[in-house]
Length: 307
Image (tube, rainbow, N blue to C red):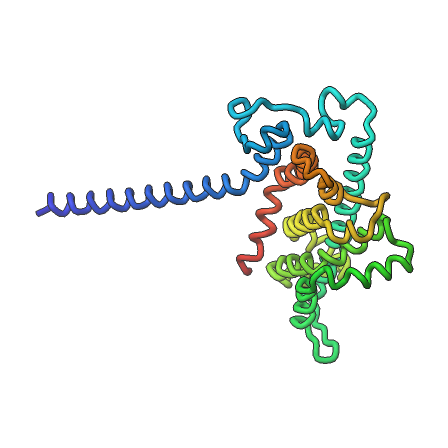
């Protein structure tokens, strides 16, 4: 009888181990598949930048197997090893557009995080009432701005920027991008501040700190992962924005997305040039994501557990 019980227990444990192992295999298989789906566009873009026209048209994918890598796409931008030291007007244009993207994306993201963090802290810690609107109504108002299609704002901003002499300026793009990403920053940061106990604010004020001192010396260090996550999300949105950059700029303040779109001409699309330009455009975001990965994960998961 004891032997039968032991055999039954062992068989049950083996079944549970098998079920657990199959579950793990299924999870990792799904993750590998999703990683392939997510990374394949990046791989396709990178390999296309090193193809000639024939390889692009035939859809060759594997370098040194389907096709021999070539610097055609990078050569058209003056960024290939054999042209990097020579004079290139296309490379100069790329550098200018790249710097414009850096100035506008980083400037707008910094302003959005600074202003958004202050607004979110106020909504999280203080009680407001304006007519019928209270804290929840104000939060919804900020979030509802994301519903508005950008094309609705095209004509008003075009007229306003013409009157303010902000057309074709990086300052104009920075201010506009700050407004577009501000609702997302407020939403993320309010959720972040709600997870920080208000008792910390009260203890800091008992020790002699005012609201500003409490915010910058106590709350900001604790909310730093969320602020970094909001900054990176804002940076990605500003870096990839095309509509307003194409509408409100003409020559001096054009950004990389506008330059990528300009690769389409009357003779068709220069896929190799567009792929090389796209690869160079996404490289900074990839590096930032790798370096600040732990902050992104902490910031995006902080609000999932309430204190």
